[in-house]
Length: 174
Image 1: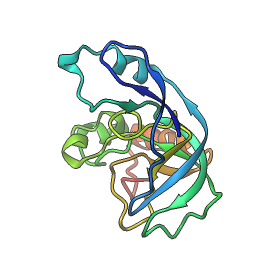
Image 2: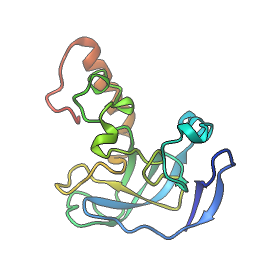
Image 3: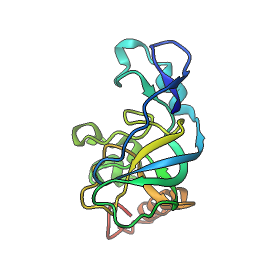
């Protein structure tokens, strides 16, 4: 399959051919229909070698949407063909950053193995991309979690507004 990858520090990203991934336990494989590039992609590619903390090559893109093409073991809530978006910045839900609604700055992400797509886990600027199903009991946090289409921004907005008003959400992952 085709993917846009960052392959060398300081180089431009490249269109490459890579093997199509298989969904692992608690994961689905998405047929990507839309993917965005944002300032994080540019920031990461601008880091010097001594500050770059990811493995190369790295498939870029943490803003993806698509339809479920295959499901891994333990996934029971999503069917092939379901349209979803990838919500990358999951955090631990307990550290100071997460309590402020800033999951993308979670201070425990690395120790917990949380790596957003395109920033440590396979990204969405590819024909297909793996993502975790948060409803699966075997779901890890190694890839972006899925939300039904059009839910990503409202989820983040709800979290931020609850925290700003002093209301605590009953579930740190909602």
